Length: 189
Image 1 (cartoon, rainbow, N blue to C red):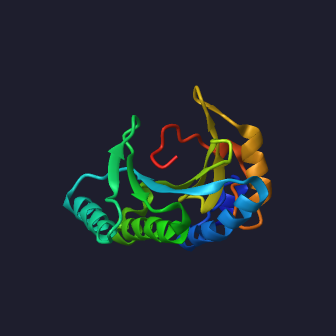
Image 2: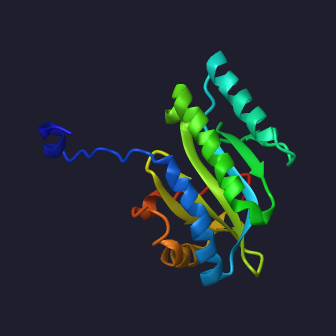
């Protein structure tokens, strides 16, 4: 970062650290103890699909890699904004395996030169009362935030703040609440 960047108030963005995804396993234990929310076994990665054979080949390779085990096949879908979601399923008690799958997808896209196309990854949780929650990893920021949807495209802000307080020591949280983007209808939520 140069003098002009400092003078104009520009800051250098944090580099993504995909290994932070592995902290989800520890955070899930803390989350369950503090709030009763447990993993659903569903997680997804969101990215902007690129045109061309190289991206299509990486996407096929990732899907084959994740489909190689005996578990359910991964599912690809496209949302209303044109982003592609890759949904991975595991048994709820297999959160570390789910996190490994999410990491593999992110790492494959990043190593193939498509890191800028990654948007976020999420792991789903459910509460004892049936409420849903996701811990979302923002790839470009290298931080997490909670997203707790309510019916009618509303969100449970109080629960989101409670979750940040409960697992804030386990995960690097996004401090700017304006960046806690809603992921309405995200697969895995």
